[in-house]
Image 1 (cartoon, rainbow, N blue to C red):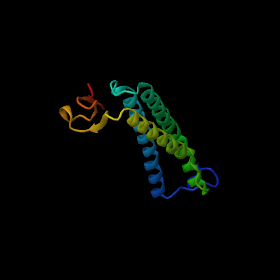
Image 2 (image 1 turned 135 degrees about the vertical axis):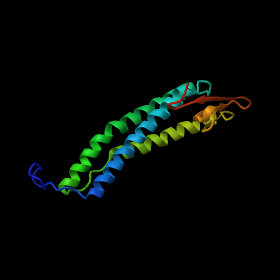
Image 3 (image 1 turned 90 degrees about the vertical axis):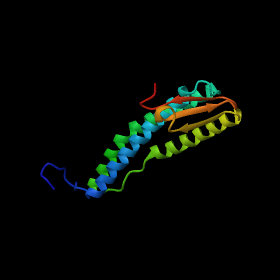
Length: 152
C-alpha cells in the first residue's frame, strides 16, 4: 500500500479489477446497442407500419440506452470503492430496470408483429456490399435499408 492511499483501503486482486473493467465495457456496449436499436426501430424503416408504436419503442430504447451509459461509470466507481475497502459489492438497480424495459420492448415488438402479420423484418449481413441491412416485406415486395457506419 502506498502512502497516498486512504486509510483502510487495499489494492484489490488484479483479476477482480480486470473483471470490473470488462463489466464496465459491457455496460458501454449494451448502452450503445440500445441506442442504435432505438434509432433503427424509430427511423430506419419508415414503411414498416405502426409508426406511433415504433417511435414510442424507439424513444424507450434510446432512453434506456442513455440510462445504461449514464449509470456505467458510477457503478464502476462504487464497485471499485467497495473492493478496495473490503466491503460487500453494491446491488445494481440498472440491471433490474434494464430487464423490465427489454421485456416491455419485446411485448411492443410482439404487438407490432400481431398488428401487421404480413410484414417481415429481419437483419441481414451481406446486403449491398456486405453492409448490415434491415429488410422489410409487405408480403410481396422487399425493401432493404443499410445500417451501421457504412450506411449511405
